[in-house]
Image 1: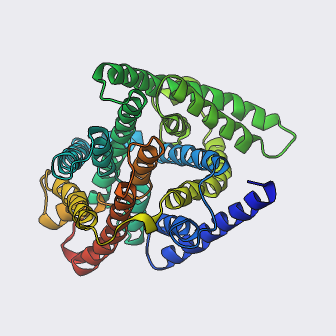
Image 2 (image 1 turned 120 degrees about the horizontal axis):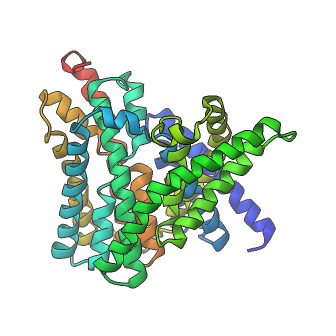
Image 3 (image 1 turned 90 degrees about the vertical axis):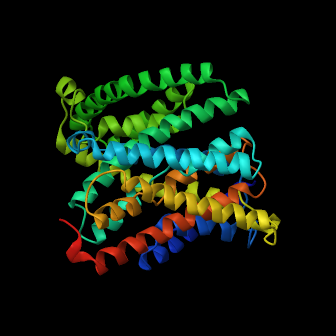
Length: 402
């Protein structure tokens, strides 16, 4: 692709994603759905103005690494510990049930391959922290009891999802399920998650000192992006997904991750605030490219929409996606409506589910109509639960505990 053509395509991607994301947000729909629709609109499914290229793929990989960095920034380990066992129960059951049922449905009823079925089951395990907490914040329920459980459970879901991604990534590299090799990778992942935040926080201390004496603007975003990309490379070097490096760096630099790393290397809250403020525009510039690329990678015209397989598989996965998470809310004790609200808040997949689809598609494990089916399931399970959650809180506001 010529440079001038690439510029036009990139302009179209950025502006279309922004416009459709804004429209989605105005209608109370998660912006990620609008960004996904931007890819479908610009790609071969509709207009055919853009297609996945190596350059766009590199930009999208930077976007997803930075997005996981933001997830790490928003992870509150201290708050998670204080919520007790309830989030652990909700997260574990909400992770295991959709994964096992999704795998069994795909492999035994719809004759999908073993690795493909694992990816499909993994897609159903996700919970989007951003979408869920944004919905609860709009309802002024972000400090409620169920919000605390949902936040803790969503954080655990993210960690479990990262570990599952590492396992699936190793499986795609070998072409088969190799538990010994996967166990070795998971050991590296565990060591990486334990040691990387300490190293990242130590490096951030150096950045902090240089920032005090720097005579040029832009030191923080330049060095922090370099740090995130370095940890992405390091994660890949040890056999883990690159996005794991972004997550570890974000976890270390989060103002909420105080022990034991802050106790050892310290940290200035003002620097952390300045770092978050400087990084968010960069994240919001690159992250939409990833979601647009998911849409560009699909060609809905090649799908036989009259096929019973497409509709039966889509409907079955959607039912599992919703039922598995709602059932997780009922694994703990409490009022019926409170448990229902917790389960519904865990349903949205959003960006996390799309990461599974993108990885499976890029490695060739998910092909044919399956990626499009999964994207439809993710879109519906992301769009409908926040609307249902709003209705539940408005209709039964007086019956829900504070």
